Image 1 (cartoon, rainbow, N blue to C red):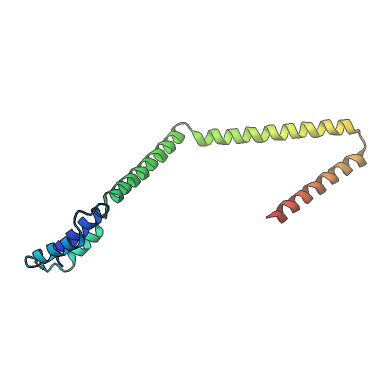
Image 2 (tube, rainbow, N blue to C red; image 1 turned 90 degrees about the horizontal axis):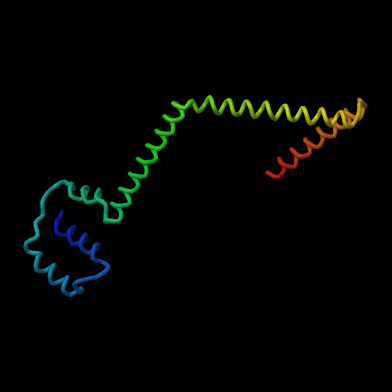
Length: 148
C-alpha cells in the first residue's frame, strides 16, 4: 500500500469544498512526489486502519453524540427503575388499579340499581332491558371487529 495515496485522498475529501490547487497543479505534485513514494508491506493493515477511522469530523461528532444519548438513556432508565423500587411503585400502581376497579363496579351497580328502581319491579321489563343491552354490546363488538 502507498501511504501518500491515502493522505492525498483524505486531504482531497476534507478540502473538496474549496479546492486550493487546480487539476494541473495536482498532477505536477503527484509527478514530483512519485519518485519518493515508498511501498511498505503491511499485509493490508493500513487499509483496515483507514477503513475503521471515521471519514470526517461530522461523523465523529455524530458517533460521540449517539454514544452520549445511549448512555443518558440507560442512566435515566436505571434511575427510574431504582426510584420505582425505592418508592414501591408497582404496589402503588396495583392499589390504584384495584381501587379504580372497585369504584367502577360500585358506580355501575349503583346506576343499574337506580335504573331498575326507576323502571319498576316488572321482571319481564328488566329481562328485556338486559337482552337489549347484550344485543347492543354484541353489535358494537362486531362493528369494531369488522372495521379492523
